[in-house]
Length: 100
Image (cartoon, rainbow, N blue to C red; front, side, top):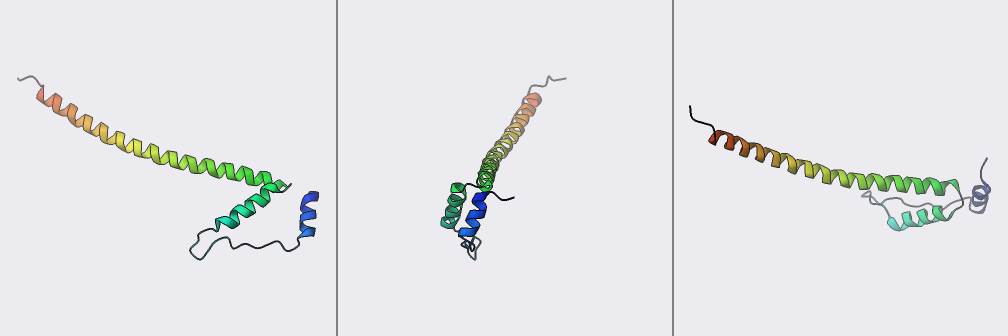
């Protein structure tokens, strides 16, 4: 049911270290997180590939969120520019109308 490495790890350390994941403000203790991440990545367990996949997925999401912010800013700038061009076009049409 469990891979040998997981059983062996549980037998060798029945009381795994506990970590304070965040302080009272909600900030994470990066040293502890890196230590835990390294320990999982060095393990020969299914958790290693799960962590790797999760990190890649979260990284992709963060990159896409940053890109989305840039796209939204660019879209807002284009909307302003289109409005300016529409106003300019309206002025040109009005000033160049033939007299009756």
